[in-house]
Image (cartoon, rainbow over all chains, first blue to last red; front, side):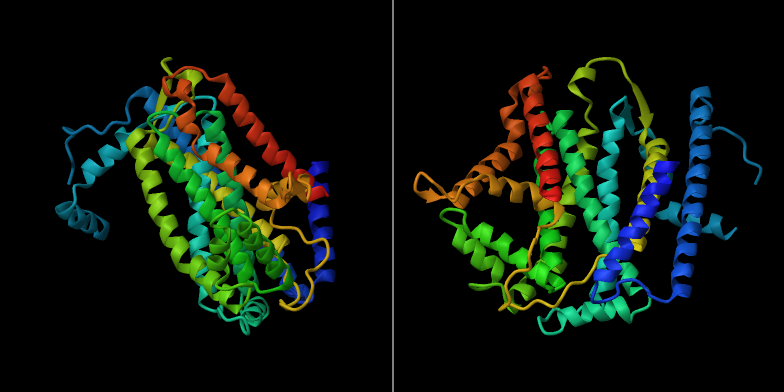
Length: 81
Length: 354
């Protein structure tokens, strides 16, 4: 965790140095814009982690049914419609 | 109801059940080295991302030496999310090349190139070379002083090749020196010639993977092993990795947007402490090892000749490694693979730190 925080702080500080050296600002300079961008990034990661968890659960379920051997569709099964 | 009708509409025209059965019946080997096989999927995903972001940037970029720099500055400063798309394109390229290198070295060490997959290796290797040229051609499009100097050095290096060197240099530059002609030429390479070649080679590469199936390491060949369906098992695993990769690219693009230097001036001296992109650092560092003159010959020419020989050997390695072609262990080629991998990593790090 300490290492993770250190890496994040390092990236942010390195970015600050990059800004200082640039002639053209390659990132929105208004603090409100920056806040929105970082907030969106955090929400984006929450979305990604959520999707990964859902896919992982789905995969586990598929593997469970495959292990039981009941995943194959039965051709002769009666349909209600 | 609409969904059922749509499904029926398709089923009347295409045998969806058969396609689904085919996808489900395709099995892939599952073993302890399988993690390395995902690097190919990662590279493919990043290529798709590059195509999308590249298309967006091409809508606003002006490929003329007088306007190129300004158009990029406008993309970054005036367009809504322009800075993000440019940053995404930059980091997508870096990670795609990194993924290709990892894929190449893992294929080398796992001997995935062995018979009958020689053409898979060759097509993958050419794809890596094309990707590197993608990087170089895209770098010049920025038309800043660093890009200008880097392209001057890279094309100058190609000019040191014996016999065809001067022709290659003139062809790449579109003249004697790096000028606006070079920019137009590199733009043509970057947006039309290289993408077409890439699509063609990716098609062949993926087709060959489907034809031969995924390889297994020599140590596991002949042994009983677990096999899992490609769809949905492997596809879902790929999907998870792609999502994480997307997160990484977006994070890097947001936190570390690439800088824009001063506009290129052909008459100005090259900036100090200039370094090429990270994937050229091992070559750059190797060139530094050679003296200016070797037995009366130009040192750089000798160095480039030796490097070319090393790369040619690497390219044709499936045809030299006869033992693994017969399913036997070939420790000599394993050591060669380790040497190539370590050399690339160590030289890149030295180049980065020096």
